Length: 118
Image 1 (cartoon, rainbow, N blue to C red):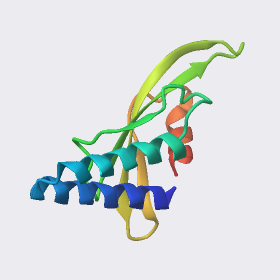
Image 2 (image 1 turned 120 degrees about the vertical axis):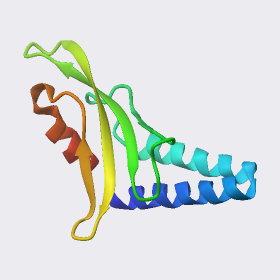
Image 3 (image 1 turned 180 degrees about the vertical axis):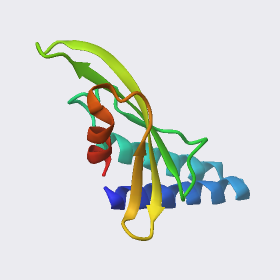
């Protein structure tokens, strides 16, 4: 997943440069590229039934903030609720990047989400 994060961070930086120079056309193209990466390369289904979204307002080239919801199942295999989470990705000198998951840790789901996003 690390290369995806680098590509998104690079596109966010390009968007900021376009914003500063007033190039709305390329700013929107970069934003669409980010949406395409998330749509095609991030988890969907298997509990991530609502997909993943980037929080453009809080994300920066050195901190990416994703929103995702997890659809939980009970022991009988029936869906029985959702939990909302933020996945925060930051650079790490030792490991390339670090993933932190916020939100309620229903059924120890935060470890699973961190693993999926790593």
